Length: 143
Image (tube, one colour):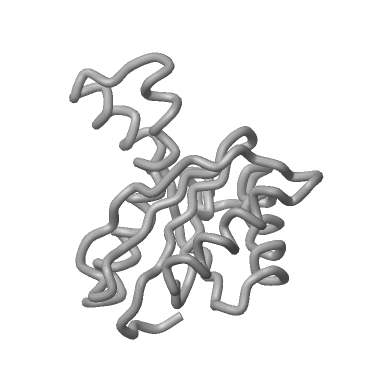
């Protein structure tokens, strides 16, 4: 997905939750949107993301690929690739994978630094990681 004007969603997919972020149409700033419960069997998570794509007139989706520190795929990366395939099958916009090593760790540390801990942190850490994923992609894509 090359750079063009329009809103994009950033996705941090986990085993339990899917964090969603979105950027402004000019692609300057990513902001948190919501946390969607993961539904690998029923597909409700993919349907909710499809609703967000339609609601906000999204032009593309950027999904974090959680490789290990050596750049290799593990079980989480395989799960992210499967989720990307499900999104591609259910959406009419491009879905791109981007390296997301350590984004959840960075997001959790930032939230802790702001005094957000425990249950409150678990509720928003996936959104914060999605913001990190999308903002990193935007910064790279815009050059």
